[in-house]
Amino acid sequence: MTEPAARRRSTELLIAAGSAALCVSVGFAEARGLSMYPRLSSLPFSLPGADHLPLYLAALMHYGMVPLAGSALLLGRRRWPVAVAVALTVLATVTPLIPAALAALFTVASMRSTQTTCAVTAAALLPLPLYLALQPSLASAPLATALTGGVLVGGAVGWGLFLRGLHDRGKQARAQAVLRAEQIRQRERESMAREMHDVLAHRLSLLSVHAGALEVNPGAPPEQVAQAVGVIRSSAHQAMEDLQQVLGVLRTPLQAEGARPEPPQPTLGDLAPLLEESRTAGMRIDLTDDVPDWSKVPATTGRTAYRIVQEALTNAHKHAPGHDVRMTLRGAPGAGLSLKISNTIPAGDGPRLPGSGSGLTGLRERAALAGGDLTYGRDGRTHRVQAQLPWPA
Image (spheres, rainbow, N blue to C red):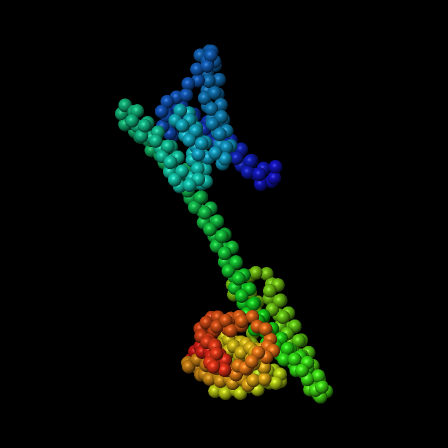
């Protein structure tokens, strides 16, 4: 027998023993005229030769054997709670087994449905009006007995319902905790997916552009080859560092929302090195900058703007290599930050890098989370990305 099962068995035996002791006490109290539950009749104990038994033997049978036998039924109260409760309630109308019956009623209330509990409770309260109807007169003693029995039954059932409510709320709280953990985990996965796409896609597109240039122009001067190889090495090293940062966050244990460590996030001040990387890869970028001071842009807005530019440049490297990119950046406190990026869509079906198609969709979600909006699409031979982001006064 396992330790929890042994502990549970010991608890059941202890409850049965305690019930037997209480039943004996109730029996002696009833012998002195203190009744706790209506007695509809008395259980006969006339055995062959019982009239010749000593008085203490008859008392032992009535106050000892009956409580022990009735309380032993409690050992099956978890397996057959309704049957045990009904049996003990019926026996309590003829023997001093009301403590055992109350324990069984408590079990029904704490384990079974409300409908079943109401039916068993009604059966336990039924002897009360029958008992009063059998009385020749409604004296104070019968009324006190009926009232006491009703209070005891109500208390046992009410306590069982209370504990069942606590148990149900505990189960619901655990289920909600599991659901919240799954939601946090899903949000972390989505956040990491966006982060890996934004960070690695740009690096890999630069690698592909420089590697493609070496492939189509193997006879380039040594200076250009050395410069391209240096950019490839630098981009690969930076991509590995970015990947290690993202993987480091993924390896951390699941924590409460807001407590998860974040990889270093860029700001609008990091836009200049990003543009320089693309220019080094051969892209011409025409920038119209009407933002007075990039350092004054809020962190969330600046980070979102940086990711939008990064994704737009990545797509231009992939799908429009060799074409110019035009970018306009305007904004001021209270007026918001406006960002427009456009590039010409090349004609024909030249070689292009594959894409997942989820980058701009993820950026639209980023912009919405930051309190702004983003639109993108084709306008003839031009692809445009426009975003409006908040910049409080």
